[in-house]
Picture (spheres, rainbow, N blue to C red):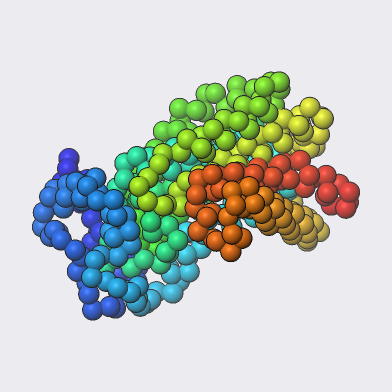
Length: 392
């Protein structure tokens, strides 16, 4: 079993996939520090032992092998796959979540958006915590070409891109039949295709091993399977219970502060706080909408037919998308600026000290407040703005 795990976790396996897709490392150093590919058991075991004993392990091995002082250069020989996988990888970044996921609420059905946000929050939290508990490294560069750098300091297993893609695709597939008329087989094909593209993009960008991706997809599938029987029960609690807004706000805040501590800074705590903040804001917003009787459900007997994509419908959807994105991004910028100013003043931090944002007492409250506000605006205010502007 260890041999199989080592093989799936091997950086050279990722590098071979990249080369088959037309992405080549052109820097002279094509070797990695320590170990040999002929001893997978020792290689994997050595990495695990090393990371337990070395507090700087992530910064050394998750970025580039020791001896590589600059980012390796690469050559693209298949531009179609290059842009396809970069686009697919983008489906797991903040820009996608803040612009595209809310469109389901603005243009399709708030019920479906609620289901997606709930499952996305749970799956991403589990994945992020598992990364920092298991502490398995990302692929080495060289031999791997790394096309992203922001999350280099994070651990690798499981791939939260794979988890999110699997959860979003199949949560939508399982929830939509009760709301919208569509051919299930076509939906299944789309779900499998999109989740597979996102999973493969993590190999292409060099950010995850095959083991990371497989585990991410499997863990997400298990979570969807285990929680599916309780979705209706949770919906009822979230929308109708008097304690729902209290639980929806305080539990994510508690989990943000109790996120596992590392011996070095990583973006996982901040990213997890963002996810929990969005989930908290949306959860409170959904409860408020239900109490006000303004759930904006599709008109007609459910499941309703998919709307015909006429030029007028597309134009109206595009305008709603633009107005909604402006509202969310504007909220993000305003609340982020104000919360940082308050926290910097409270803790006596210089305003130009960007490193202070990494401190838990500043990072957690400013990110949680910012993205809770984003979630509230998305779930409560944006659709009401559409009504005022005559866009519904």
